Length: 244
Ligand SMILES: *[C@@H]1O[C@H](CO)[C@@H](O)[C@H](O)[C@H]1NC(C)=O
Ligand SMILES: *[C@@H]1O[C@H](CO)[C@@H](O)[C@H](O)[C@H]1NC(C)=O
Image 1 (cartoon, rainbow, N blue to C red):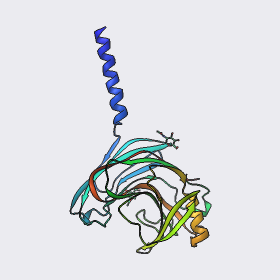
Image 2: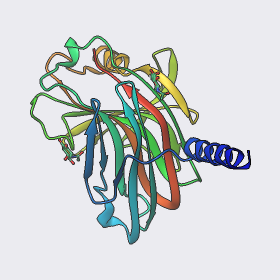
Image 3: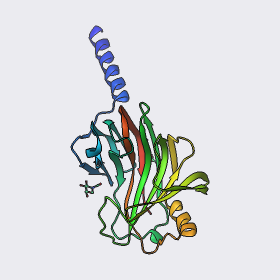
Image 4: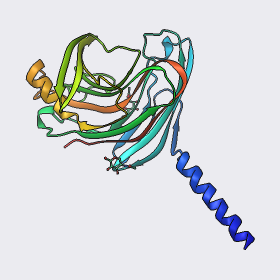
């Protein structure tokens, strides 16, 4: 009797700790350490870390299935307040040579949170290029959808509020080297969102001359650009994305 009660208590404790802290399936701490599975990928992409005076960042895969991916990243960065230190992301693996005009929808949903206040954004990052074999670190065009903006600014200038996918966004346009960047900024922090990234391309094709029939989808990612602050943990409890 006593033994079985103890056994039950142990099982309950185990179940509780599993619910609070899911077992990590992969730990990525090295620069550009990479994971892929179930049509998704993840990258501890600390591309701007050399501008920091100090700091570090590790990324954890919590679960992955064909229906979505759960992950988190913990970071601290100091120095160069206006430089991006990292863009750690989850990405949907995309077929090469898929023209934007040949895509009918890019449905996605996400739920995320930051443990503490930092200087960072939380954003989708989607590159397109005329060359289907373009490298995955840039494109001819970059579409960003910002769900969180914490004391940092997008590239370029605001063109005012626009309505896309039935929601209002502050549209910023600017150049990052040779790449034209369109950033749609949610007016309020949006911890849960579901939408269709393709409707942003439809808008850009109609109102900004985006050449959808010659641009290939290169990457389709969601993550956080870290500037300064921490220690902080960014948790994505579920991100799903697909292309059809
Ligand atoms: C993640 O989101 C997708 C799309 O909404 C859903 O199909 C899936 O069941 C979710 N996964 C979890 C673990 O909640
Ligand atoms: C590009 O993708 C490869 C895997 O195909 C990965 O190893 C590399 O780190 C990625 N680079 C960036 C900047 O995301």
